[in-house]
Length: 103
Image (cartoon, rainbow, N blue to C red; front, top):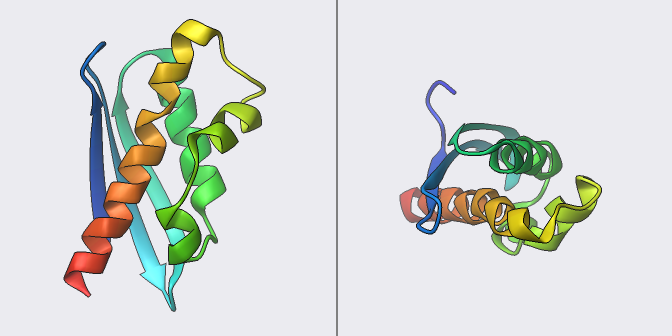
C-alpha cells in the first residue's frame, strides 16, 4: 500500500510467522487494508481474512478486533494452527495504534 496511515507488525515467536498490516483511514473508518505475511498457510489465510473483515470497520471496532472472528470466518482451524491465526488481528490492532499515535 502506498502511503498507509497506519502500519502494524506482529510475530509469532513460537513458529516465526510475521504479519504486517497497512491501513488507510478516512473519517475514523478503515477504507483500505492490505498485508504482507511470511508464514504457514493458516497465517496467510488469517491475514487475508483479517483485511477483508477489517475493511469498513470504525477505528473503535478495529481497536478491539477479536481473533475468534477470524477463525469463525475461516470455518475453523485445526487446534495446532489457531495460534497462527492470532497474529494478523494483533497486527491490525498495532496498525490502528500506529495511526492513533500519528493523529
